[in-house]
Image 1 (cartoon, rainbow, N blue to C red):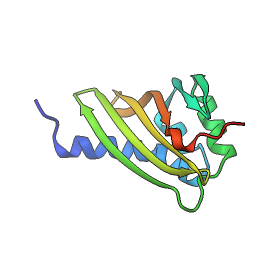
Image 2 (cartoon, one colour):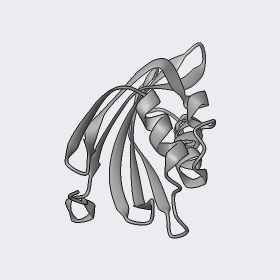
Image 3 (cartoon, helix red, strand yellow):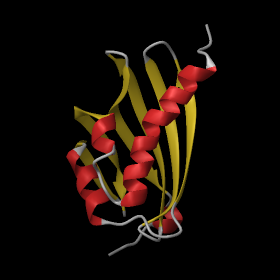
Image 4 (tube, rainbow, N blue to C red):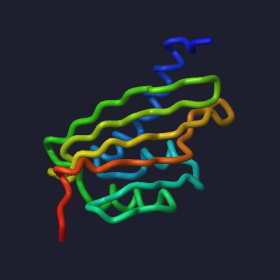
Length: 128
């Protein structure tokens, strides 16, 4: 059975906490979305990041999004208690483009992110 439009809107609203944190360079909004034990996986400038979501919070709080930062949220899959969301980011830190995939679960009636995986677009990788 397909979820109704309100359910999709609820998932987008939850994921917007992620994009708001990145846009404002302040992890406080994302901390409302992610569970305490959420994990992340991805490559930043060719180096594998994996582990606690705390790494993401540090990155957000350290690097401002930049004035040209843009995002798009797409709900790829939505079931009763499970959602898969793709977030496109352009211009993070003024130069990096990402595709993030967020795995959300509806826990006690609230959408929470339990995992974040991402790809940094290859044309924005800085080799140091």
